[in-house]
Length: 184
Image (cartoon, rainbow, N blue to C red; front, top):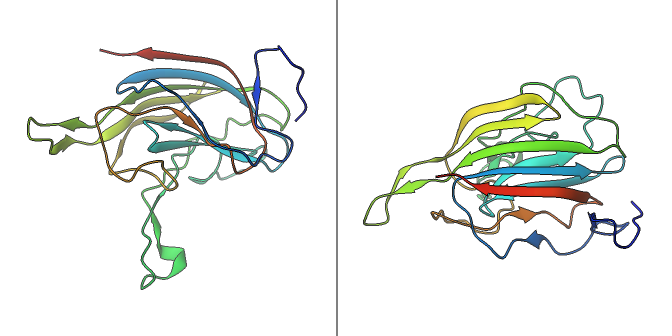
């Protein structure tokens, strides 16, 4: 990816190995829209509350998408060396359809997210959920409950609010037209 200065697009560099982009503000229930573009074979993700990832990936042409494809809810991970490597990932969800465009084309996510709920003592009483995820105009998730933070989250705990994070260290990605609206 090559960008021009002053064009309103964030690019994490041609190698895509930089720090994560993390919002200063923290959010609970939100509607998030963003446009993204990746070159061939690149990988990134957008994390709601710094904890729950919707995958950004060059998935153009994938016939049977997995949790790790664009629009997927990335899996959680059990870091337990007594469990075989192939069995450590769990709770990932593939998008209903592959809505991916070709690498180098702008794509759009529209995400409605509900934060986990806690009682007065701080105990979680309701899991977080992706109420709706739309990828390039197609619904890829609806009412998907999350048992905890996905793999590579900023935090392992769960809270009522957290930042929005764009993963910056897995490959080149460009981001533009980010809109966040808190939902009551």
